[in-house]
Amino acid sequence: MNSIHRALVASSVTCFAAGLAAPAHAQSSDVYAGKTLTVLVGLAAGGSADTLVRAFVPHLKRHIPGDPNIVVQNMPGAGGMIAFNYVYEKAAPDGSTIIFSLWDPLAQALGGQGLRARYDQYEYLGGISDLRVNYMRVDAVPGGMKTPADVMKAKDIAVGAYASTDVAGILAHLSLKTLGVPHKVVTGYRGGADVFLALQRGEVHVHNTSLPTYRTRSKAFITSGEGIGLSYLTPSDEKGEFTRRADVTDMPAFQDLYKDVHGKLPSGPSWEALNWMVQQFGEIAYVGLAPPKTPEPALAALRKGIEATMADPQFVEESTKRNGLPFEYVSVKDGQRIFKALSNVSPNVLGTLRETLGSMSK
Image: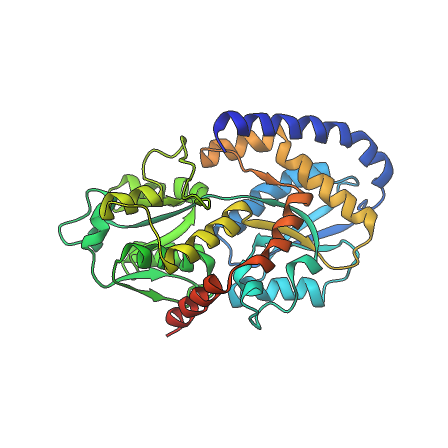
């Protein structure tokens, strides 16, 4: 989405949210009055998801009728699945506990035991899309990296991940595998912030993160010359066409990097799996979910609160200043559509992803 389109979308959402504000308050003002809303984050404190939610919550509080007290609680473990399972199985379905965190499409697509419910069994509240980037240590290549294409000179480098099912780790792994760069995956970290510390220490060499996190938490690491952006991940359509981001000029799109080093656009099983991951995870990265059977008045208040917060000029200004770009809202309709599309992944892609997870867990 280009900047003009983004601005138009933000403007239209602002108008829509403003139109909803008065009746929403009148109809649901007592739902959260005097109550506490607990927002779970499935990853450790200090990571991308935790940072986003803690910046989001003060504004969300203003947009939920009844002005509830909101508590952010980290519940890391099993790649975030502990928190998702808690919301589905144990949280009271009364609107008092929700999760707002990175989601894992692989947990459902591959039928693993980590996630004990389909995402469409939760009550979807709203989401945020993302742009993922790969970056690495400059000294991972003998003589140092001058350009992203120098990654092809690297040998036996390590990707950091918190688990074999870590979407960020998988994206970095599949990117390097598609390029043909020898590497291994090191797992066991508690979250993105922990992986970044390992990158700074030189324990790992490559990390995948969101563009906002890359421009904030990782900024000093890049500007100091210790790190370099490799590529940003944008999906290709069935014709191989993709959209280049005009707001990202310090690294190429993955397709352009691949073409630079191989003279053609990417193809093959690893690329098909990577492209599917980018389509799923890029279209919606952070999801807000409530337990099944949460009462409709609470759902309406939460959904309108999230939508209004995403369009709040103060939040947009703060997030743009902090991240270099505003977050992009994923509506209830679009989020539900994306969850249902999980069932359409091809057997070939699933086979490659299962092979990928197997190799990462060794």
